[in-house]
Amino acid sequence: MTIMDDQLPEKTPFVKEIPRKADDLSEWYQAVCYKAELVSLSPVRGCVVLRPYGYGLWERLQSELDARFKATGHENAYFPLLIPESLLMREAEHVEGFAPEVAWVTQGGNEKLAERLAIRPTSEVIIGTMYAEWVQSYRDLPILINQWANVMRWEKRTRPFLRTLEFLWQEGHTAHETQAEAAAEVAQMLEVYKEVAEDIVGVPVYKGEKSVSERFAGADHTYSIEALMPDGKALQAGTSHELGQNFARAYDITFAGRDQTQQHAWTTSWGMSWRMLGALIMVHGDDQGLRIPPKMAPVEVVIVPIARGDSTVASDFAKVLHAQLRPQFRVKLDDRDLRPGNKYADWDLRGVPLRIVIGERDLAEGKVTVVRRDFPPKTAGREVAVAIGDVAATLRELLVDIQANLYAQARTFLHDHTFAPATREEFVAKAKGRAGMLDIPWCDRAECEAAIKEQTSATTRNLRTPALGPVCLACGEPARVQAYVAQSY
Ligand SMILES: [Zn+2]
Image (cartoon, rainbow, N blue to C red):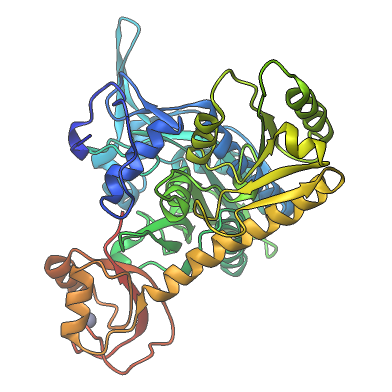
């Protein structure tokens, strides 16, 4: 299976075998996405279909994020898909940043529209317009709203979860009385993203501010979390923006302040998309397929009874166990008419953290076998015999252990592939060679960043202070910040 990024067929390719992950991450990634039934390609070029198992993953991410949004005082709402052109044009920088990716509706039914309508690439414009209507006084602030939605950005390449025309995400949009409150909101939501990425998805990230050239169009400050993929490329997994008063000025979000003066609100926006699932797949998967951290798993435990002849002893017990475990776990009973080996391979491919195998001989001895997905095949400790009375407690312990193990492995990888190059030569070689995250003192100049990109294809991923050395490792000018530099998705 060889697929050029920009020449994806409209039909999902049939995947016979998953290639080795270490041989070609891109081929492996696409094969896993299709074979594990996460997505299918669609007749619409550039758009993928999220199949039930893929949607199950998205729902897990959604519910973990949503609970945290609500715990931090936010409410969900929904705004229209279409944005009138004249509205979109009001924030100049924003328009310039998004114009190349906007899709337009020009006709309704048989009539050509008097004004083109943009399909939202993001919703600052439409939401800002409504906030202008809703906010009159400082008493109306803050507004803390999140929207779960699809957006569209006209991309030339397609890669499931990473780059598609239409994608699913959430976008938070808030309006505040003061800059300090807006800044605190942005920091809080970035921390929520980091927590979900690390504690739930098991993907360690670096948190920091984006450089001026990597900033969101129309923002004063953009912050991101950045993960590292196995091919040494970084993946931006969530962003949080301080929009200053830019959108408030463009869309007239004004209020009577405590001192009775008319003021512009301070707004923020923040988003995480199904890209995070792309990171999950690449970071944790292995040659057998997906390995899903338990907290993200649509199915935490699968029960596979092994029938012996016509006896129903194993399958009867499997039904009883399934009913017992159901209130406590996301558990599935696999009673398909398939050979056990095929079932094992199938659940390994789908990355289900635990498998309970029920055989008659084991049952006669009062036990079942539990197999953990995070250990490679034939490793000691992968399979354990568990007394029937201890199954629920053992599952609980193992799920905690698998979550921790997958995170620890990813943490070790990030640590081992984060470098502080000593010389410019080493920096250039490592950036070109996709060694990983390069942690360098940096001058914070756009010219320098452009030169790095030209020479190595790498860009700054995010920045923090203070700089850990006196001069920029790329150009020799005085260093102002510390930067993570890498090629990226
Ligand atoms: Zn520099």
